[in-house]
Length: 127
Image (cartoon, rainbow, N blue to C red):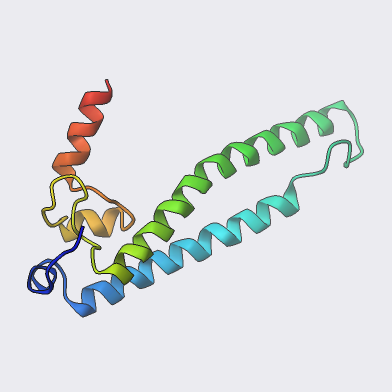
């Protein structure tokens, strides 16, 4: 979708785009840092020694880290896609209806692709 420059200016100014870009980059850094720390904490199979309780705790921690990684992957992709939308000039425009996404919503979820109304419609249709 190509957004005309005059409409882009109404949606978001350069200072807003810079602020959201910084938010997205910071969140990406947090994710990468957390993933690195998680990898250091998770033992390889049979890697830690100890009694049965220690092994059970290590297995539970490993499972938790796997679950976190599964949710971090899609979030990391969403952040990269949002950064690409900033570069293309389409950031802050709903991909479903083409209307501006409110700054309140972008502050809460800066990687979002949809305005609140379209996101709610998606959630309702999935039920």
